[in-house]
Length: 321
Image (tube, rainbow, N blue to C red; front, side):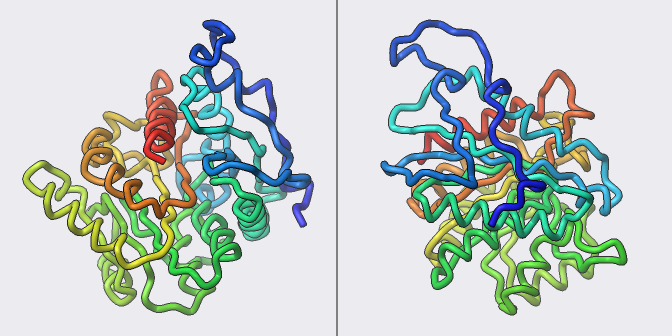
């Protein structure tokens, strides 16, 4: 059961933008998105029903000694999605936010898992807006509740492996994949990490990734000379799994494109190349069942540059479904 302390329903006032008209071909997202309450969720009908749900938490970032502010991102990203034009065949819903109440991140992750499981079982495709990258464990746990016997693969765009063990403060934004391994007991993790930076991960983390048979692609490999290699590696990973969960930590991108994140990087991925070399191929498999975007931090953004990129990624991915 969803604990009301950890959940707030959709705020329709978040969605607003210009109005061009009311004909079907003039509508923008703020005119057509429908609020739903995760506690009283109606059964969805139709194949492409997308449910936004925020994870308004940066407790994991705080514990990880990162820059606080990502908890504000779900509202900001929604606002910047408001003016996007409707996508034919897609119906949009806003299922509100899961919160981190009383600094209890562990319970917030469990509440998020319940919400994701409920959305999937009621016929929605979850699209989660973080919050910190502690979103990963709750999101994946919810998917596995819905698909316990399926081989679920995770493609993570991130500068970091997030395979660290918790410290004295508990789990944090860098422990999500370690938590998945611990809960499942599976020492062969179906996880492809894209954008990994040598400057952002210790030797121990690389050793842990290798022990778990994690596939990864370095940020320095993202160039046109490596296009065939990247596409083949992504294809090989996708071929071996039944369902795909995509998580995008915005710190995978260079700070030229994403300055407003919890841990900015002067070097990193470029949005167009990510789209052309990876996302098109991943979505073409027809295996994507759930998506999240994490680590947008409005406190440190410049002209909403990072939030706008997150909104554009949302739009482009939904066009690929």
